[in-house]
Figure (cartoon, rainbow, N blue to C red):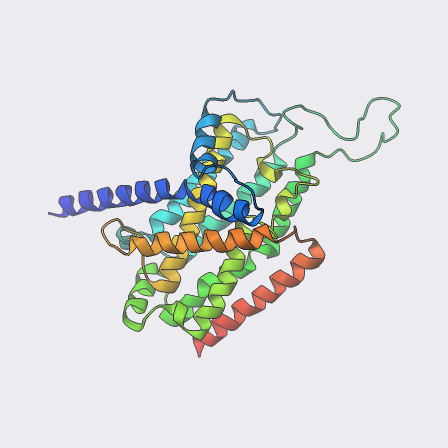
Length: 332
């Protein structure tokens, strides 16, 4: 009997992951086609192009050998990011609640931090420009900048990523812990159970404020305009992703779409009390939340420039203070 239960749980989790992953591949296309293109008054790509056709195209391209001090780790970082996002999603499913060490807010925060650290490593471990090892400035004999410090264009991205890890993600993590003040527990099972009895945390004053902070953190951790400081087009082109091509680029694209859906599922669990599972119609709530966040992010990013530090710091500070306020109100 126990064996059948375990098998059924595993099948349910696998089915849930597959369904949600397939849906996530449409999210980048929806954002590009129905939001950015409409706002910019252009036709835009097909819905399946950014999240489905692009990865397939990249899979058939030839891999390039980049110059890196640790090439094995550098190449594996996109895969590590995908595995981390998958672990976050698995922690949200009801079947995972039997493993408290996984299905807890502490574990989710830890996984999110690993995902952020990967950006720093991506930028720091690439020592090439378009796959060509070219240190700047040139250090040949007689060069004008003979004693200058050598740097690579992705070093800028790594430093910016480190800056965002240091203070940029504060709003998101404060918003994640706001529901804990109501449920008095860091375990997802308790947070969901509390909301099923007392109603969604979203519909409280503390929950409403925390939801705003969560959305700001959502855009920050996805590196979307106006918080796309780690991949500003003017100087680092695509940030830590610049040197990833072919199959590695395909994994990057798929991971972004899945991460967008997973963050929506995190909100559904913490603020509405509806975990993702194929065994319940509640999965429609997860899909709806993911779509709402994509539409909101698309609208905001379409009208937003890239924030400079002068604009970024006050925004993050304001969102951080709102996050603290939501936690204090939850304790009352």
